[in-house]
Image (cartoon, rainbow, N blue to C red):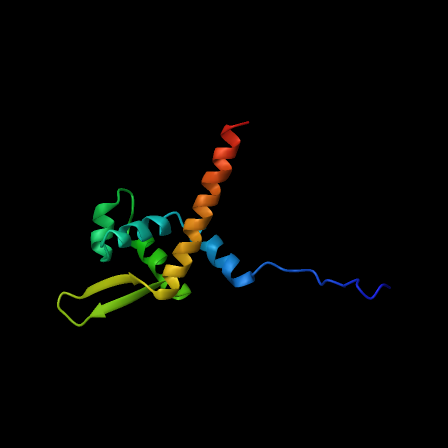
Length: 116
């Protein structure tokens, strides 16, 4: 064997981050939630009222998943009636940047296909 030859080990996909992206894109409402948060709509009731077809049950599942991933932060205020708000975390900002890059890549792919 030549001294300059290298043996490479099979490279695997980044398991946790790939699963997170898949889970977020698999949730039909996550991208809508991010859009709402970007427009200062951060309370669940307000989100449901602003999006046709979005139910409280589905929204709560979506928000819970995003909090578990560390993308969103949940703030519960000690008030009556109870008030809950969601905000994007610093990690979430990084993650949303990656989603924006994926969207730009898809736009580029779509543009390339229209020129065929």
